[in-house]
Each structure stands twice: as structure tokens, then as C-alpha cells.
Image 1: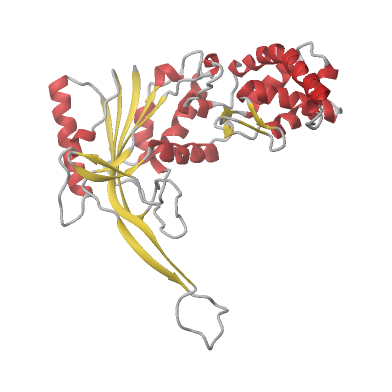
Image 2: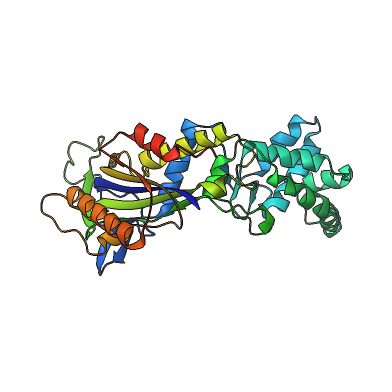
Length: 374
């Protein structure tokens, strides 16, 4: 396995980067003590959004349940028959993810699709020999009339097989689904359309023990009558913490370059994708409470590795929590370096290494992608 790995240490001030079901910062027990935690899903979302912002031509995927309207627009571009376009959109959406509500235009599960994939599916559906009268019947508003409902059900059954066949066009090689190749896609109803992500992500955890704290806040009512100025207009509490996090990000370059991922890209295009992903992985920060607990910081240390073999987290550098009264970053860096050196010697690991702030981020990325065009 040809790997690029990032081992990142990043400190945050008063923040709540990732909340649980009661609004508290997420946490985990590791090494016998409570740590602050940010789920991999939260950071992956931030990375994907930033990569799309930086390289929207390749990272164009969207994850949504509301696909009927978009499919309807695609079909309408190819036909002036609005009723036919809506019917085709409904049956296609149902084949992709099981229709939940025709009125809302959503399916039961999130679908991760790129614009070019949607176009390929629409083209494939239109290439099927479908009964247009049955399609238009699907587009009719639902009714309590049992006979009409039976006609709709029969029409849906008739259309199901050819449309399901057309949905296989999701496996078409496109140039705007790099994010799907990196982050992966699960299609529960058709495993042949599932894509294993070439990216590897850990939950970020603090290198030290962390206890959540509570912020009591009050808000002033600007229009409260002057003769009643006692008390606040609103009061409440928020939980927060501050922590130095360790996070791991890996990229399986062999998987990324295979025929089910980006094998149809040129070597230069794949390198552009890798660069955009690495830059986003380094710079992205979850946006929770960005306006009230501004937490946009840069990593204090990055160890970048290019090597072959199995992925390897260095989180056990912090199994014994870092203790300090003068900040955690410096001691966390020392612990990470010591652990990595020990693993290299014990397991005879050979790797190309680059680190910040010894070098800058551009040089780090250049070092890691060099040779990636094989």
C-alpha cells in the first residue's frame, strides 16, 4: 500500500468543535482519563467542503436526500414535457435511494453524487425503452382512489427494472467525483455502487486530560421598557473545552489510482487531487459555533510521511496523557517524535519524512506527493 500520512497536533482555545446529542463537546476515555474528542465525520465534512472550495472541478460531489428536484431539472433540460420529466425523476430517485416523500422530493437515505454522475444516470434512463404513459402516471398527485392507486403501483413495477438497470451508470468514470473516491460512498440498496474511500481518518482526541466547562451567558433586551430594567432578556448555558488534539489522516494512493476510483484520471490530474486534499486536510476546521467561539487555528506541528505498508496511527504517544502547566503543544510534539522514533527502530519502518514548522506547508506537500504520478 502506497501511503501518504499526516500526523497533526493542533491546539484550540475555548471551543465546542463537535457537539453530542445534548450540545456538549464530545469526549472519550483513553489512557484511563477523559479526553476531548472531535469525530472523524465532523472533520471530514470540513475537509470535503474546503477541498470543494479550492478545487470544485474535481471535488463536486453533494450528499443529500433531496434529489427529485435536481433530477427533474436534468430531465427537463432534455425534454419540454414537464410531466414526463417529473415522473422520470421520481422513479429514478426511488431506484437510487427508495422514495420517502414525493411532495418533499426526498429519499430515505443520503445519496453522495456528483453532477456528472447525475447526468450519466439521466442519460442512461432516457436510453431505456420506457412506457411514457406509465411515467406520466407516476407524476400524477397521489389519490385515495384505490383503482388509480393500483394503476400507479403497476406502473411503478413496470418501470422499476429498466430504471434500476440505468442507475448502474453511477459507476461511469467521471472527472468531478474525486471527493467520492477519497471519502467513499455507501449505497445500501446496491452494493455494486458502493465506493470504498481511499482516505483514512481518525477521531481527533486531546493529548491530555480534559474536563468540559460551562459558560453562563445572558443577553440584553434592547427594547425592554426603561421602567423595568431589572434582569436579562435571555439567559442560558453552553459547554466548552480547550485542548491540543492529535489527529491522523491517511491516503491510500494505490486505491485512489485503481479503476474503481481515479484510474481514468491522468497522473497530473491525480496529483492535483492529492494536493488539494492534503491542503484541505491540513487547513480545515469544523465550523461549529464559529461566530461565538472562534476556533480557527493552524496546526502547531505536522509530521508528514510517505511510505509503503499498513496505515499506522501514532496516538499511543499520548496513551499516557501529557501533563504541563506551561502549555501542551511543545510536550505533545516531543512525545509524538519520541514515539515515532521508537516505532521506526522497533518495526524497521522506512519512510520519507517531512515536518512543520521545520519546513513550510508547500514544501511538505511537495515532498509527500513526489513520486505519486506512477
